[in-house]
Length: 73
Image 1: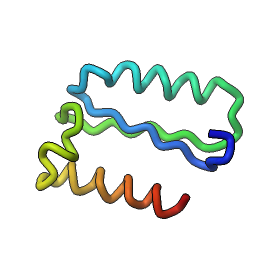
Image 2: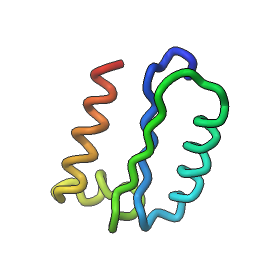
Image 3: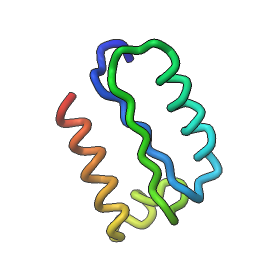
Image 4: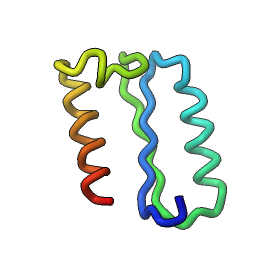
């Protein structure tokens, strides 16, 4: 974690793990880590929507966002 400049945290509105993702985001922000943390919540979607419904517009946006993050690292 210390080597990363940016840490994206992605959650889906209907995901049962959404609240944990938000708690993790807040913990990273409050930890004193000097990088940039970003929380993205996708409305109307459930867990792993970008894999299970990859043809939707929300999935395409998420896949593009994930690829962009990986390519920057």
